[in-house]
Amino acid sequence: MTDAAVVLELDGIGRSFGEREVLTAAGLRVRAGRITVVLGRNGVGKTTLFRIAVGAVRADYGRVLFAGRYRPRPSLARLSLEGLMYSAQESALTPHFSVRQHFDAFARCFGGADRIAGIVEEAALDELLDRRPPSLSGGERQRCSMALARLRAPLCLIADEPFSGVAPADRPLVASLIREIADEGCGVVVSGHDVHDLMELADDVVWMVGGTTHDLGPPDVAARHHLFRRDYLGPN
Image (cartoon, rainbow, N blue to C red; front, side, top):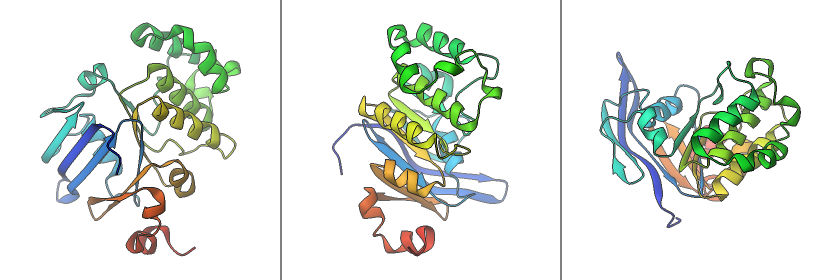
């Protein structure tokens, strides 16, 4: 396991909704400069775990630590100021701004105006700058979200299902943007069901099953885990 600093840690997280226990002693460690991929079937609690990390949902028990500090009552507003960026399944965009306005707003808040042109070109967004998110495809929205993350250069990026609804032609570019975000030192955690794309992208794999998490290590090691293969990956 790498010695890179842990930027986000969830430890012993539990959460129930009514009588339904979704998470039981679930954990997650996101390290600087690495991509942690969280895999698991629908309904195992991946999104709930992410929402607890950013304070959108309260855990029944467990600890959230960000940037080395225990956060007894995490909130996205506070964590965002300290370097956390959350991109939900619908992407990190507001429907009210054009793509250009998103970049201008991020540059005013986080700096990097001189980097916009290069990032826009890299993400192939030149022809989309004056359009608003509702008029974009799923792949175009995710390209915009990940390009904005590159501009912001957060300490940690949580991307919930960044390949959902993304056409095959857009997937390599979305993956490349995520990799470059990590290469700049950001700790990245992503989820999804696009196993091939995610295993190709991952530095570390976490498997969620039965309300808890299993840190399986690098993807080549994870792929040899017999229960993970049998119960999740299935036969070759």
